[in-house]
Image (tube, rainbow, N blue to C red; front, top):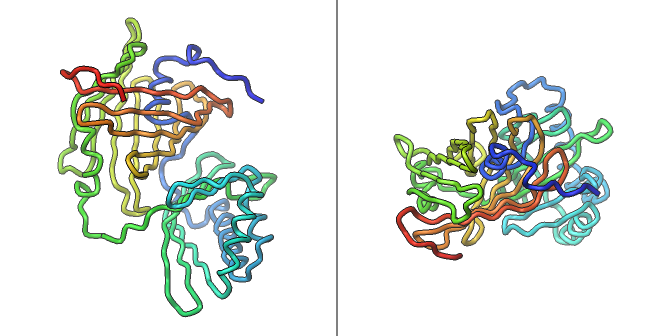
Length: 312
């Protein structure tokens, strides 16, 4: 229903912000620690009623908590799109779930807009025999007609090794370390990645040049022990900023990104980074929107400086 926005209408800084930090969303990055926040309490109440409906096996009550355009992403990355499809999945799964109990623990919460909230947590599923299965999750809550509903629920891998250092956590991403340049020339993007002191974070600097204009974006990637997943934060020279959450899917990394563009426009994007070989990698931006309007996909191929171009 929305017309496609042409890439040429997006300023250079905005393009780099979309590439690095996702499309724009107005953020309140500080975690909402107020236990008396009305929205937080309302969402926790919905989560509690959801768990109660689960224990009763009341699928209709469960489905009522999902937005019509909701999505569920399981640990393998499979997407179930839409309330009806999610309802069918729940009914199928409940055939073998009689007597199970569900406990939802929220570990992090923050408001994005007055009608959008992000929550991280852990779901504990207890069998009638007493065994437990824990799954970290990430939820996007939306308020519709005054009621909070599930817009997106993503199950995350359960990493029980709490002794790993941040550097050990980041080891699968060390292929990013080095100096890179995009094979595309408009805009031409140079990327430098190196370890932060103490090796708790990877630091990336993006320099994008189109004609005589150059913009710079700084990005930091690290492990969040609270939600047990990778996070990234970025800030650009034009005033844009954002954050994302990442997971490893087979041979690639995928991230759900939210941020604010320098001009205040709002949106979201899904990013995919993949190592091709030791001298090249690709970056894709998918499902990009700005103020709810779709943007075309972005594909960028980077090669290590000083090497010949290698097509992915």
